[in-house]
Length: 166
Image (tube, rainbow, N blue to C red; front, side, top):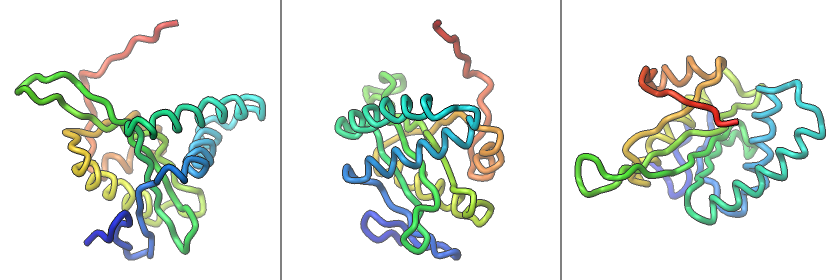
């Protein structure tokens, strides 16, 4: 059973919650940890540049209700976090547009990995996504995160293609 903005405590005593506007700095901190984890080659200058741009992005999209942050906390310390970028497709099957949640920056701090916290966070995000009327979640998986996403029910899509505009 969920308790307000906080999710259930799992067996490992992790509480899940939705970030609020006062958590922008914490969302930024976790995003930068995520970026450093997947790009250890980035120097201090690159991280500072990303920090400025990321802060502006998060703030702008939270204010537009397009960005929802989530945290998993163990003993009042952030163990893991992620965000949803909410966007819409035009109607296809009915007059209702289709709302999608793109999972971003899914990150579990090293000392909390392989303890079920990330799995618990993803289950919380999936449950909360229903409250935002999303019809699906999508994500781009890192090599490290791929097994967790499969375990949480995400499936590979063979139809997604991309083209990078330079």
